[in-house]
Image (cartoon, rainbow, N blue to C red; front, side, top):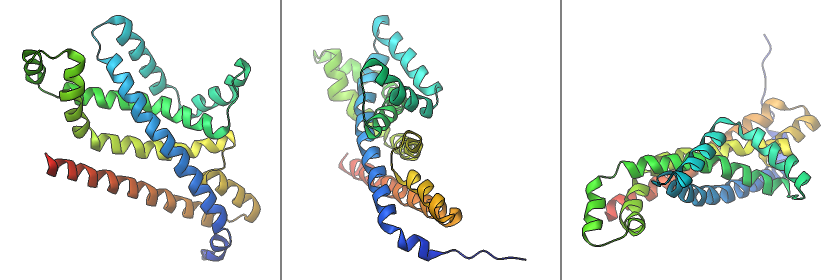
Length: 221
């Protein structure tokens, strides 16, 4: 019965390449996360609007991005936009695709949180002479965002993991680095076990940071 030894030297010799991939992964995920939160907030205002001209396109968009695989969306942006005269780097295309899809999910998270707020909050705002938009911005949304933090954490971790698909459009993030190293060294087991541990580490840091923020918000309340 043969045994398999983990070759740590392969990992050690290629640490600079791993580090480069980690930096790109964090950069594209961070940019896409910020864009996701902003886009999700914009979308939710359209989604909860009482006017069909706003909420129907929002529903259609959300259903589209939730039902089309993120890889297909990356391909559409990376290979399709140049035919329209719009050419972006693989980094930009990956960030756009991640933000567009996860923004749809985030909008639904925000919508659920907004709808969980008691209607008496609206009534109190109206009684004070506030407009609907001001009530939403000053009263409803701050409460909704606090209650949505756990779901937001999960969605941002999903976004981080989905960034690995950007290797398919030639973005040299950590997964792409893994493919290059396995072609060079044939050390598939060592390389991808290491990459799996890297994703676990980054995801854990994100989760701990946002959970800490959630606890701080609860204390301040």
